Image (cartoon, rainbow, N blue to C red; front, side):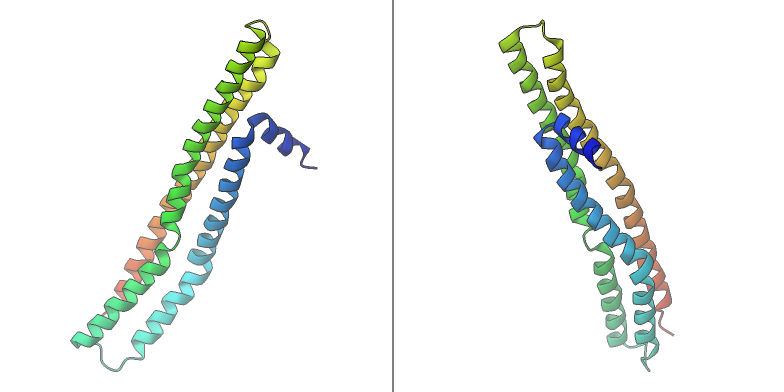
Length: 168
């Protein structure tokens, strides 16, 4: 069923397996953040609004500090895992480069053993050099899109909460 996937991973060498693991972990975090921003965040905002509306007094220094605390707490909730997602995105192209280096070493080994006449033997090394690079860049690009989206959603949510928790 997944023979094509294992064939692709085998042609890319061992570094491609590591990129797959990073990709799975990255997408787990991306799906968690998508769940938070589209399912959990609206209820969290409503909870903060209710808590603020239940206060009888909203003008004092203490009330302003509580408001700042609630906004800060919400900001922490929206920023969860974003720095780790950024780290995983930065690792992917570097792992692709590692795959390129290991693939070229394989090509040079073939050249050292057989000389320049065996193109079929060199093709495996060239495939092992290019596939991890492509995969690492592809994973990083998709991760960059979602990272930018999450940062924008976090900023919009924080601004919306700050606007609704006004002192009356």
